[in-house]
Structure formats: structure tokens, C-alpha cells
Length: 278
Length: 168
Ligand code: HEM
Image (cartoon, rainbow over all chains, first blue to last red; front, side):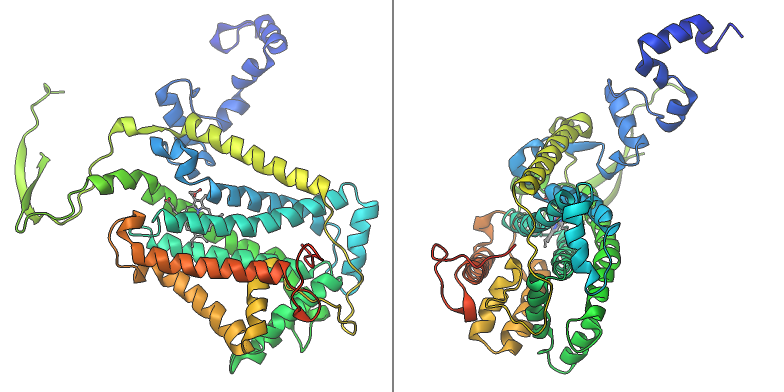
């Protein structure tokens, strides 16, 4: 058993493990079964890194050089994604200490502040990230509009975007009720009484949303389920499609010069020969 | 393996010129995502997390008294992003401000790429749609600011420097 793979002696292995534990670890079967691409030091390595990593697969292997400029997208869609991730993680922590029941929900807020480790801090993170997300999604929409990125072939992704915007607003609004204090109660009272005004379906919609005639325990439970189950599932699926489409269509910034270079008005009857290698 | 042959070409067809032929992007115009693009994303993500943490350290999330359906507070405001709608509600019938306007707004937004028949992505190529949307955005932002910052008890006008009735 003195000879190991690569012809190293057991002693050399131990010495390497002590001096270069990282390098030794990268040669283990465990590491090599998880990370199957070569080192991203060469162009081939970089391409392989993208092909072999699930998370990097969200990105194309190569991106247009222009998208490296901050002003190409102002990174607003990406910032919205980061904020959503922050909300997902901080929200999970809060769920451990929250009961969607009247009036326990309110006391849980006090509990978070007084007797949960980092409870108030995590609640603050969740709240400010939520406000920022609404703002950033709004700015992202404006960026997409003013750069003309909603046009063909990206019309459908714009539609998905509108659905994401609505989901974001509903997220924020359902979350607003959960602390069950005077602020959340009356904000939601104002908001949902509007729904009751819709013709025919209005009172029905209000009834379904609140689980009764007024904002009470049933409404709290429904808002909670929407907030921690229905909306996250919806938003994650929509976001996956949204980002996948960005990848498929390419960043719009790359089309800008091409569009300018394309001759828009061909001579009438102009023909082009299409040929292909055989 | 045979020797490398010269490629031979054959005419496959004749198509109208208008058909969009996307010229293949020059390879020099593209860079590897890893590391060039990824590094930028890591930096932006770090800044975003830092900003949220700083806000969370500096400001506590609000918590008022226990909800009480029998005690209407002097100002009952919707969250800030709905303050514009609440401002509209002050001026128009709830059917209009609460139902019609938001529905039309969302439908208009969704339909925008299909309504806009202009060609080209530059602002000067699509003046009409840019003017219309900008006017709507300015109106929405103005209504939101008024509702969020300039309204007090009974939806009366209060200058924000006199008293700011804004809860986040
Ligand atoms: C939860 C909300 C949203 C998230 C997390 C999100 C995320 C993203 C991301 C990461 C990108 C890549 C480019 C960039 O960073 O700008 C993107 C592009 C895009 N988004 Fe969104 N988005 C959201 C909402 C919206 C909304 C509200 C719209 C419009 C109504 C929209 C329309 C688009 C379009 C058309 C693109 C392609 C733009 C291009 O290729 O330059 N998205 N989005």
C-alpha cells in the first residue's frame, strides 16, 4: 500500500495534505466526482466550467462584451434577483418564530425583538429588502422600456416581466399584514376594501381573499399561505423562465449596433443567394 | 481519414432580402462569462447585501399597537407603492380609481410590445410611445409622491416638512 495513484508514496500524500490541504483535496475522489471540469485557467477550462456547473448554466458561456458595461442594464434585474434571494433566506428564518394566528402573530413580533437571536435584525433585513425590491423592479421595468428591450423577439419576456411585477406587489402587500399591528391592519383594510368595488365579482373576490367579510384571522391565514407558499412558488417559476429567456434571446444590448448596421430598406426585388457547404 | 477537402457549395434557394439574417456576432465581441461577467455580478451582489445590512442596522422595522378593528387610526395609509392609487381614490369613484385604473394599467403594460408598431430601438425611432409612457410614468410617480408624502389625517394636505405621515 505504499504506492498510491500518481505514484505518490503515502508519506508524500501526508506531507502534501499538511502543507497544501486545498491542493490535496482537489485530487480526492470526492472533489473530482463533484467538480468535473478542468481548472478555468485556459479558455477551454472556462467553457468547461460553464458546461459542467449547474449554477453557471444559468449564464451563457460567453456574453457580449458590451454587457460588461454597467450602463448596459444598470444590473437592475440582477439586483432584483439578489434581493429576492435575501428575502427567501431571511423569510425562512422568520418562519421559525411566527404563527399566522390572531393575536399570536403580533406577540411573535415582540418575541423576535426581545428573545430571538438576531430576530429584530433579520426582520429588518426582510422588511428593507422587500421595499427595495419593489423599487428596483420598477426601475428595471423603466430601464427595459427606455432601452427598447421589450421589442421582438423579447415581447413575451416583457409579459413574464409584468407577471413578475404583479407577483412582487402581491408579495409585498400580503407580507404587510403579517405583523398584525395597527399599521398592517389598516393598510390592508384600505387595500382590500377597494377590491369590493369591482362589479359583480368584487364582493366575491374580497370574500375569497379575506375568507370572510372583514380582515380577521382567516384573512391573516390566507395572506400567510399566499406569502410563504403560493407566491414564492409562482415567482420562482416565472423568474426561471424570465432568466432562461434572457439567455436564449441574448442581452438586448448586443442587438443595438447590429440593428443600426442592418440595411432597413432594401431595393425592391433585391434577392440574396443562400448557400451552404455540402 | 481522407485528406482535407476544399468545401464545395451548392445553391439551395433564393429568398426575399427582407428575411432577417442575423449576422453571426464577431467572436471578438464576446467574452467568457467566467470570470468577466461573474466578477461583476459578485461585486453587485456584495454591494446589495451591504446596503440591506446597513439599512437593517440603522433602522428598525416599525411595530405599532396590536391590530384593533374598532379603533381607526387618524391616518390609514396603504403601503407607499399603492399611495398613488389611494390618492386617485380621493378624487374618483372607487370603481374608477380602485378597479378600472389599475386593471387598465396592467393590461396596457402587458400589451405594450404588441401595441408599439414603431421600428427600431432608439428613442428617436419611437417618439410616440416614449412620450405616452413617459407622461404616464410621471403621473404615476407624482400621484405616489403626493399620496405617500403630502397627505395626513382625513387625507388632508400636509407638507412633509410640517409632519411626515409615512410608514414603511
Ligand atoms: C421580480 C422581478 C424581476 C426580476 C428578478 C427580473 C430579472 C431580470 C434579469 C436578471 C434580467 C437580465 C438583465 C438585467 O439584469 O437587466 C432581466 C431582463 C429582462 N427583464 Fe426582467 N426581471 C423582473 C421583472 C421584470 C419586469 C417587471 C419587466 C417588464 C415588464 C421585465 C422585463 C425584462 C426584459 C424584457 C428583459 C430582457 C432585457 C434585455 O435583454 O436587455 N422584467 N430581468
